[in-house]
Image (cartoon, rainbow, N blue to C red; front, side):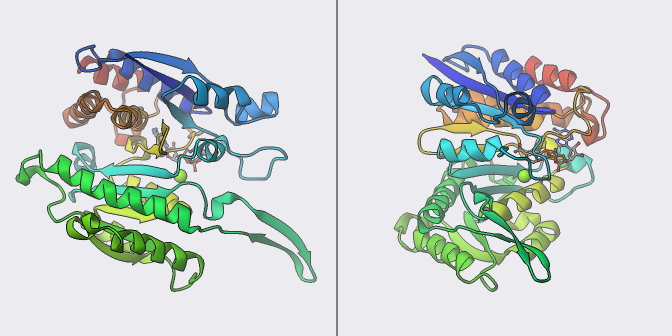
Length: 364
Ligand code: NAI
Ligand code: MG
């Protein structure tokens, strides 16, 4: 058996953390990782665009669709101003590969406690990944009073239903995993819960459709009604509550942009963006991707925290059917964080990207 993984480091610290994740995957012994791993190096990103005029080359897409069972994406340095012909490759990738949900676990551990956080967080954010304002249909107009711009926001029943299904089924799945852990060690002690995030008091048509559709997924499935509680939270008070009582959340499901914003905020609660992984999930393909960006402020210095990328690699294994190998990586990372000696500067340490990566590898 073999598992072929496309590696797309793209820009900035993506080029440091993706090789780190590969190193960890290669350190897995054959008794916990029964399949042979093949890696395919693939191009994409803003720097690639500047050289070749395209950010997500056809060859990359063809390789992903043809040879790969999954992929790891680093980060892309998308400019804040409009650049003719440029479009973010990760947004394109999600669309092209139909990766309709972005699954983002935010879990506190030793690192959070060390940085003064005492509240345990065990949250799973499901971000709709294909539409909302990120369809990027923007128009600039010239009016009598000057320029104005309009952006379209697409919310569909189809996409909202898929995101909702993912949220409720993951809530049940997480509960099964938790039952394997002693009750005293569980962070979330209640029944599984899904919080639907929206702002339909203002955006009653778009967010209204989102809310109704996700609620409909729940109402239409007896398994969900029996096993999961459901609640709603307006996005602004969601942020407030998340900072006040993060332990109150289990699974959170949100439209694309709200989900993007909430997950960076949640990363602050566990100590660093450098710790939080994600998986872009579709029915046929999965792309692991750290939640952070290309971090130009620290790129090229070998000080980026590789843990978000390493955990994203573990999420990729979990999703492709190698749960024990994934678990081994999660445990090794937790041990390194708990020991507390090998930490990158974002966590208050002095270690390098390579040192943290090697510490994780040694435990495998
Ligand atoms: P960012 O996530 O790159 O950085 C925010 C802050 O967190 C910075 O201070 C950075 O040094 C720190 N940080 C991030 N990851 C870290 C890690 N692994 N270890 C240690 N510190 C880490 O967000 P920012 O600065 O807003 O954006 C920079 C660039 O990244 C932009 O061009 C943006 O478009 C792009 N970006 C790309 C994303 C993607 O590829 N999916 C997501 C978010 C931003
Ligand atoms: Mg983001």
